[in-house]
View 1 (cartoon, helix red, strand yellow):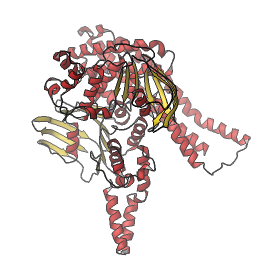
View 2 (view 1 turned 45 degrees about the vertical axis):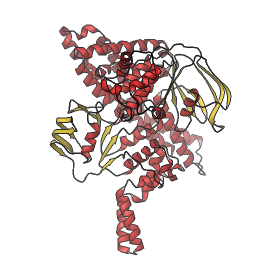
View 3 (view 1 turned 30 degrees about the vertical axis):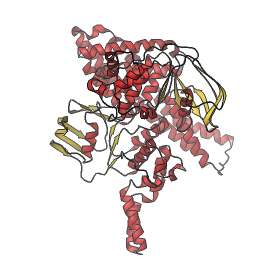
View 4 (view 1 turned 30 degrees about the horizontal axis):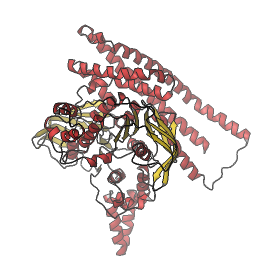
Length: 635
């Protein structure tokens, strides 16, 4: 196991850890969270042996193989596939020794090395590497292209593939979802869930952390605070502690009021659409998390647009693409104030192409496209960070947009984005990727857009800034179109989804869980089609078919009966949780005289939530067994 005892870690003049203790057991999956600059990445560097403690003890099991993602990728001529194989140093060493033994005609060495390669799975390693690359979005043709052919984001995917290919006891991942799209992130989530070793994960994607880890280590006040459960559980426990502090409580009430006004706007719609109902449930869950955000250093709010013309954009049978080659065709889309659209679709399907059309960076190849004269576009994309003037300060950037505004007004505004004090007067050049992204967002917000286009806005943003952005989007009065792999942001910001697939853009009637199932169904169909090529199934007579179907129903009956029982339990638990939320909304409950009742309500809510999560896990396990039986019957 990994242990730190009375650990002190100092970088320059800053103390990151002081008298910190931590134990991580083999096979456990741990999420490492905390504000930027508290020492999360430094802790990974300590584990990798790149740093040493200034005081205290650190131990790591001897012989453990550690895999991590390289942060730099040179522009190499080697192919993507071969570059990924380079990540397994033991395989490469054995491969080189085998080549030498064959050149020397050393039969004994050749036989021994073949045995060693077989023991580490060396004969299947190219197939494994190809599967990893396919999962991360590389086509078969792209796997043969040189590394230098790919952009920075795609090279980071290659580094991630290297780390995943390695046979490791400990996997260290620092923001692995940056530069990934939603379908690739779903794939990565599934891969990491199946990983058998010990995992330490740093991520600013709360849904991703929730799905993978079962323990949280929070870096705060130079300590490593351990919490059992996923990120949502951690927030709940921390929120309950902070709710007892008056300052935190007041901030919590303000944010709850903000959230409630948003829920009220969607209550009628929620009664008519499954997607809106799902979103309403997510908003209800979010309210109980808000107290833990009371110490959020960021606050942003979209300024009221100068005008809200209707419609903002009209499209009829539009085709758009590059070099007169359409990527999307027959697009029919009208954007009106209040539209809140999330774009879904596989990598390369054309989501960013549609965003660029709306941003007026591409012109239609054909069809009718009309933008209202009063349209004011706010467009955020990662490449826009490159247009910041590195020698200028955040204040100078904003002053160019508002030359007549008072300096104090501009500095107050920048403070909500984390540019406080001297930082507002510092050159942009040394800023981190997250700080530059925050500045671009600040400049965008200041300009009072009535159409907001966000293409992966959360890359490099930490959890606190993502929360501030999500809260601000809920108060935005114009239209918005979002492409993001951050499911939490999409779920809480979008009321409609559009699917971009096979050159078309169409309304998607489901929610994000339905989209995930759509991806799984598509992958399954592709496999079945490949497997059935030139293979015909033997015919089965109708009488035998009915008998087989009856036998299948009999086999599945006890599983489905247990699922029904669990669903009834979940309904009762959700009903009671709603009653408890009503109690917690009563401000009198927080008075000193009612402290015993508050403690009891919080305790019951925690127990009910845990029981509900366990029930849902049992239901999913039963569903997996049902699907396995159905798959066997179909063979």
